[in-house]
Length: 113
Image: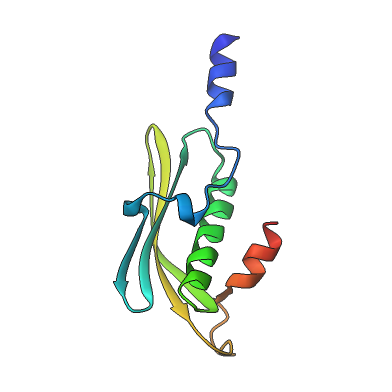
């Protein structure tokens, strides 16, 4: 019973805002391209990690004065913790009709409230 309570208590149940991220979790590669990482407990679901990661990307996109973002090149690591790292490319202005993979940063934040 104690093991079950300990394991359950290790799951990440809340989002850690961008302002509280470690310095190595966001790295600027070019003007509008960043490497973004999000870390959670190994007991946190993949769905929760994906939600948290998208929210982190949306916060970064808006902080950098962009409107949309595209994620690519995903790297997942599962050990004592679960980490996802992706390359994030940001765009400004009107959403191009020919690029359906762009994610609206404001929409992500509205949906996560």
